[in-house]
Image 1 (tube, protein in one colour):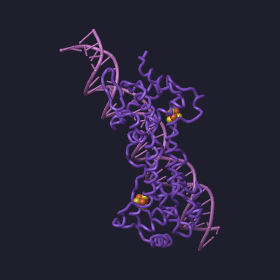
Image 2 (tube, rainbow over the protein chains, first blue to last red):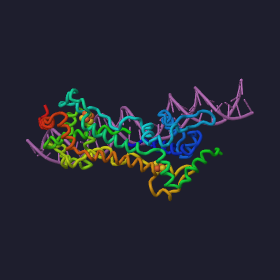
Image 3 (tube, protein in one colour):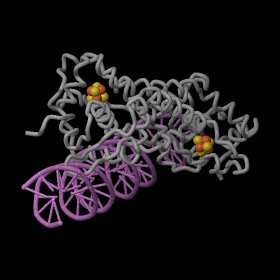
Image 4 (spheres, rainbow over the protein chains, first blue to last red):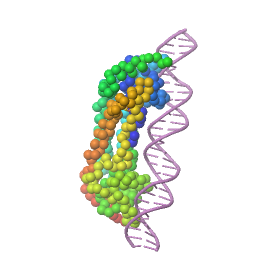
Length: 160
Length: 160
DNA sequence: TTGATTCGGACAACATCTATCCGAGTATTA
DNA sequence: TAATACTCGGATAGATGTTGTCCGAATCAA
Ligand code: SF4
Ligand code: SF4
């Protein structure tokens, strides 16, 4: 029950992309964050499949956010990386064993599944409340308002 | 990011134990639920280590709940199986790369970690609201009030 | 004292996550 | 226009954690 580490990288990349005007290659984002370039590319592909960003191929290509930062929630990123499946999967234990209840009495999911699903929804609701724009402004408050500008400049600067 | 399947079995066992007066062996609980006996034993050991139930060895031994069902929450069971660690682990990406922030500016956890931790707390809070007693009463409402009595009778009946 | 029965932790098989590689495709540019 | 350099994309191995199993040590009833 550990969240994939790629979620953290993906969120950082989304925030960094808000500071860039043009497309940014995956290799550049990986160097900025000090992570594996090839592995980060895999996660960026997942974000692209989910429609959060679209890729531009060719010499000056890279990734660009499709929507405005206010329209992308943390939940969108998490579900793009982890998949939309719920954390709890029911195996219908109540229909097994010597005292199994008949499938006719299982029209509604049982109380255990209901409890787990409710908790899962609460988790997702908390993630949906925060947008990439919120993250960006909070980063500005924590580390100075010019940190985004510095990131933008570094992304535009040519590689040595 | 899938919850361990053992959580489901463990919760069912806790509810079943509220219907039994004396200790119940792991093998009996496994047969009742139609799951692997040796694997269920592993999870019951975890619950025992967490102090939710205590084991009685010997001929008429088994597992007994230590507290009343009202005093055991679903969160207690989940944390006993999954471990108390948070779902999100921070790797301090902001301290890496060419624009790394100095550790002096990292006295407080960053906004991404704060968001993830808040969502994790919401998930745990939802699980803490439901007790084993709540599950038991809900099972009675869903499948008839006598289902608990039938489970208790079956647990007491001798093996063929 | 005997003996059957139980738990407890140590041991493989499987799945998932992590990390990597090279080919397909496109805008640049001479 | 044709060569070219750069990009993404999915297919491919390795590490980690989960699932499932086994047998020995301890315990209580007879
Ligand atoms: S969690 Fe609920 S629905 Fe799933 S097997 Fe258990 S009783 Fe059935
Ligand atoms: S910026 Fe936040 S989530 Fe990212 S590494 Fe730093 S503390 Fe962790």
